[in-house]
Image (cartoon, rainbow, N blue to C red; front, top):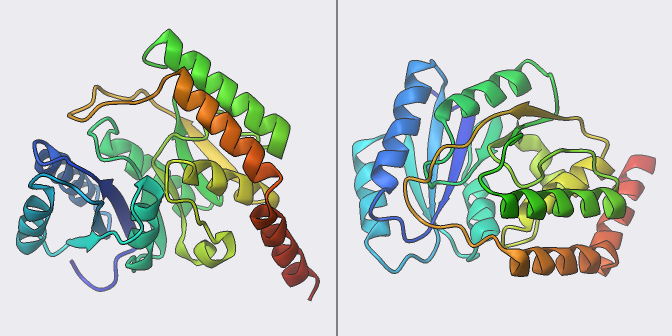
Length: 244
């Protein structure tokens, strides 16, 4: 890799010893073939298997890969710690279960690099099951009502944007709620969000925990965040910065 990377890809990783090497290798191979100057930030997140050992082996053999042991546990915490080590002009975060085609990383990167949007991400027109379709539509609809967001698919990744936006967004959530926090704050900042359609593949490994219980937890967290002092204070800070 020559010089400072243009794109930093952050992968939060937890208990994925059985398949993470194949997932990282596929991403690495495709981005190289697409002539993208990138780095891979492998954010290990409290795994209890051999994941960390495998990640260190990957990084030892690949100068583009760097291991970060997350101090802020959780999906969002790993991403935040990964961002802290990112050097690229653009940052990307995504799941590391093998569902995302590396082509989608390149599609989103080209769109944001050409300034088609401040944030570029994918969305999933077709969901894997009726349950997921109901959960997703409900979640996105409530977000529109509470926060005025206008995206089709809040939680879908990859999401790519300029690293310089991170201090402004000041993202805090350590779980998967970080994706909603990102979209809500981007909307409040009047940032443009572009969504590109895609079809997710089967998971290479791991499992999904999406069910009606997780939907209720998300809805509860949304209502709490909407009236929280944290969100109110962030908006106040941003408003004061805009008027000075």
